[in-house]
Image (cartoon, rainbow, N blue to C red; front, side, top):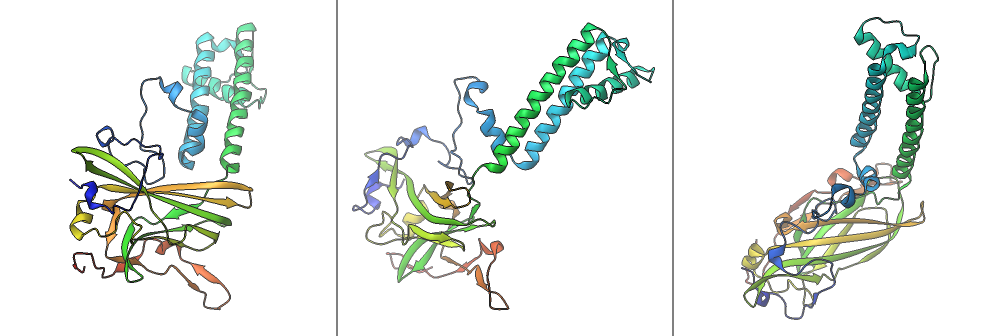
Length: 326
């Protein structure tokens, strides 16, 4: 088990991270790769612990449209079944005599009522059918209002369109070593005043107990004025780093996670956007360096950012304190 004595004694741990210090109470990583906390919640009903509005805003596009489509089809199947059960004679203008034909006509009449289209060939007859059609029209209006709000929320929500490299690297840096990873904007947005904060979370042994320790990692540059190209975020492993003087064996036995928070100002929305991710130490490539991912165009009048090179790296020799070179 990795012990606290292996770490740089000059490094001071943090206590206000929002994560627990008792290692035995945690399972898995602290943050998922997409930046969401790796937390499940129990003890209350699903309706209390889930914000459906936030859930719908965060759904992938295809799932969002699938939910809207299934809700529309399901609602109209329910109302079509009600019309069919009260009797087809309550809907005037049907042209089919079979049960299947009558149900199909009831379904399409429901769709027309739900959307308030109302072509007029089929119309409700009697108080019961008219009351059901009126109630369905109200449900339809409310549903479309909610759907419109969700559409607006999805399209208007400020979002940091940033992608992080799949892996972090342990690379040579200014005669020593450094942990580095890369981030790049992938849409035609302009982000300014970008700021990164990187925290090292380590599970280690202290006085015979497994505990979680958190350390703020000093960065080569923690801010950039404009995030228009790729940004390689570098933590130099020097005298101020908690990883200073670790041997190759220490790195191999280290059980931890690099937690990344990045915020920037989106001048289009005049709002701050945030991106998060994390790298467990199994996702840190030892002895590698990133390949360049932007270069001048052939005409020489523009810089081209190759987003497909975000994760590209090559091997590189690094030296540990035990004088082992890999």
